[in-house]
Length: 311
Image (cartoon, rainbow, N blue to C red; front, side, top):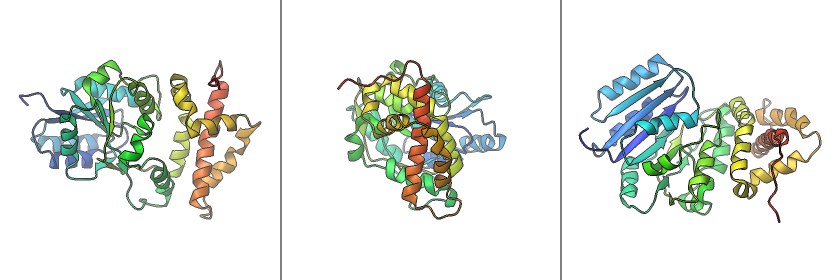
């Protein structure tokens, strides 16, 4: 590439296979001013990486594959990708995403040329049906909580921004990189969005990508449990925003209940639904209470305790 690309597409992956996503992006590239950078964050799957190299070799599009021997985490992976990007704009895509339309890239390129924003979130969608019984819960959770139109997201500003389908000016990321203090899964992109929204122009558009990598029920339970300290880090950094959110209110109320942790086995049983008799609405409520229970425990363990906003 002899000229500076108009867009750098950044795809971190860990135990995911981004080959289908890479092929889809290459197939709809309308100009040679786009580059793709992939970052294997410690998976070290030789077969996946070989397929990625083969796809890249057959493409006129510049594709770079970066390999990390040890998992560094989502924030570190995104920061490492950004450090190698050449464009003034970058587009973060999760490896398990798939563009909804053939004009996905062109829509972003047009929005970038508009010069009326610094951050663009395109949103994401789910397929009409889950892949199987074990992913039905994650499918229902995302459908009810995350799959919103641009208008609905705009009303909440940074609350519904995540890095699974996110375009950002390079200058913004240079000034405000992702916080590598977040470990494992969860909340690092929410914290970043809340931070940059105070100083930069955020634009929500309808340019969705499908979320294909749904998690099984036990993995979802584990992720919600293990993200507790990340959530507390998010709330510590953005107390006013956190206190306006339903999850925070649920967490604080649950934390005030003596012995609330004792209900977790029951919640886990309802979520797992091994007898196939628990309605989805009850499973979703149990999942949210399970998450809030672990988050409440993290708050309780923190010293000093989280401060309430004055009335």
